[in-house]
Image (cartoon, rainbow, N blue to C red):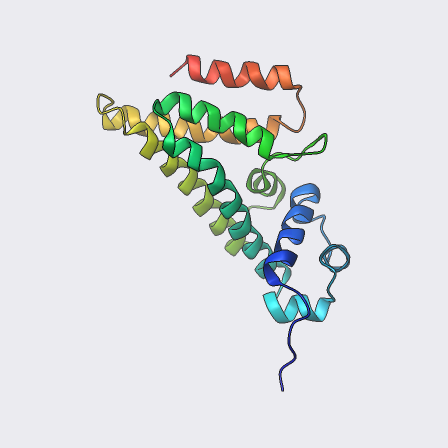
Length: 187
């Protein structure tokens, strides 16, 4: 007879996501996950098969949380102003107490060896493609933009967001505000 779980998967995934977000993928040990999630290694392996499997579920959780930010973006009347506000909303979203955590995806992409973790790299790549497509869909509202410019601006905004994610862990609020304002002066 199978044992019933004494925990909710969505809750332990969110706890694991926050731990990975704060500490990085490689620095997060199974014992740290056990402690943070409040479940034992057997339960982690039983539910997620591996640390990689757990992290892939964390990416889904992170994506769902970021989708909440995109609601305002989809409702914005001006595409560039909406995307700019999304950048500011992201800074707020990625701050816990006074700790700026950056972006879970960016942090892990900067940390892991590109020759290891093929499933994770694929998931990171898919995540960034989705963000790029989000920006592209919003920019398409301006029908005067050519396809070539639309592609260039989508890439620019994605890479700018990646840069903001990394920079947010180091630079002051004023410097980050200057960065965001200058991104949108150039569009």
